[in-house]
Length: 348
Image (cartoon, rainbow, N blue to C red; front, side):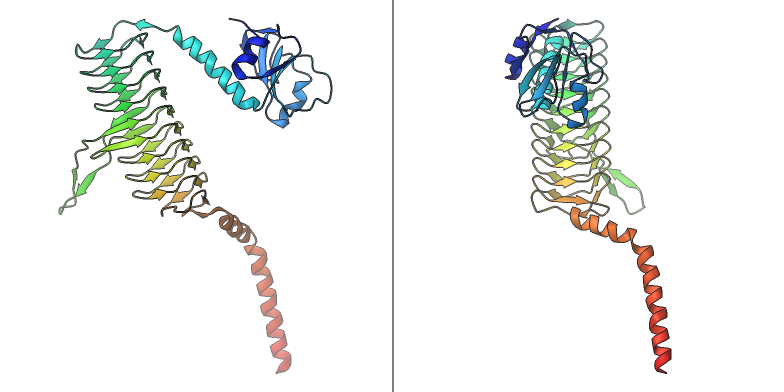
C-alpha cells in the first residue's frame, strides 16, 4: 500500500515542500528510516537526523528552521507529533477494516445481537443477550458475559474478559489480558475475625474513546457503576477499584492503583506506581507524580503533588533538597556548638 506526499498532506492538513508525488509504503524512525518510508521530527534532540536520514518523506513542524539542505520531501504541520499520530491511526483503521467475519470455533448465544462488518476471533464467547455494535473487532479468546454491550468501532484484543452487564462505548480500545467487571474488593469484618463477602451487584461503564492497556483490572461496583469517562487513557497493569469514577481525558500510567469510591476529575494525570486511597476526590487537572501515595483529597484544580504521603510538588522538592543537605548542616551545628562552648569557657 503506497501513498504520495500530496495524499498524506491532505489527511493531516499539511503543506508539501518538495515533490508532491514522492511515494512511501511504510513508517520508520527518523534515525533508522530507509528510502520509501515516512518519518517525523518533533523532538529537537533528533534534529541532526533530519539532514542525514534516508527517509523519503518527513513530517516536521511549521516552525522548524532548516540549517542545511534536506534530501527528503517535507510536509509541514502545526504539530508534527500529533499529525503523525493521526496518520498512524488512519493506517491502523484501514488495516483493521479488512478484518471481517466470524472465525471457528466460537460460541455465540442465540439471544446475542451482532452488528455489521464485525470480526470475531476463534475461541471467543458471546453470552446471552450481549450486543455488539457495527465494525467491532474482537480478537481470539475474548469472553463477553451475559448482557454485555459493546459500541461501534471498538477493538478488543486477545484474552480480554468482560463480565456480565458491563457496557463498553464506541471507539474504545482494550488491550490483551484486561479484565473488566470482576468483583470489587468488598468484605465485611465479622466478630470472630473472619470476613463476609459483600456481593458486588453493580457493573462497569466504559464510555467512548477510552483506551485501556494490557492486563489492567477494573472492578464492578458494589451497587451502581464503576465509570471510566470519555477520552480517558489507562496504561498497562492498572487497578481501578469498585465505584471509582475516572474523569474525561484523564491519563493513568502503569502500575497505578485507585481505591474504592474515589472520584478522579477531568484531565487528571497520574504517574506510574502511584496509589490513591479510597473515598477521595481528586480535582480537575491534578498532577500526581510517579510513586506518590495520595491519602487526602486534592481540592484545588491543577495542583501538582508528589511523595508519600503526597503533598505540594514545589514544597516536596524543597524538602528533598534540605534532606540532602542534612549531613552538612549537622557538621556545621556541631562546629557552632564547640564555638559556643569555647566562648562560654572564656567568659568564666
